[in-house]
Image (cartoon, rainbow, N blue to C red):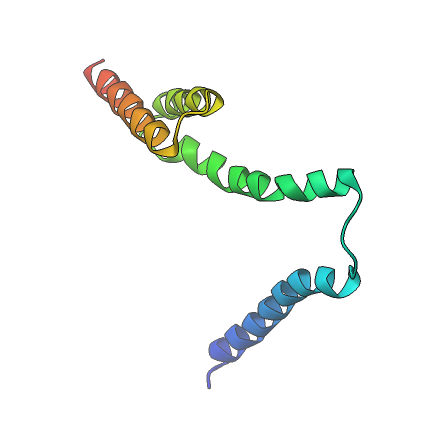
Length: 107
C-alpha cells in the first residue's frame, strides 16, 4: 500500500471513531429521561438550527447574483412565516429568483 492510502485509512478510522463517540456518549452518560424544560427546548431546536446553518450560506451563492438570492431568501422566509407549505414556498421562491435573474439580465 502506498503512503497516501495508509494515511487515508488512518484519517478515516479517526473520523469514524470521533463521529461515533459524539453520538454514543450521550446514550452512555444520560440514563434517565430529561426533565429540565430548558434542556428539552434546547434539544428540540437543534435540528432546525443545524439545517439553517447548512442551508443559509448555500442559499446566498446558489444563483448567479447575490441580489436575486437575497430576494428569493426573503420571499421564502415571508412565505414560511405565513405557514405556507414547503412545495408552495419552493415554487414561489424559484419563480421569484427566476424573475429577478431575468430582470438583471435585461438591465
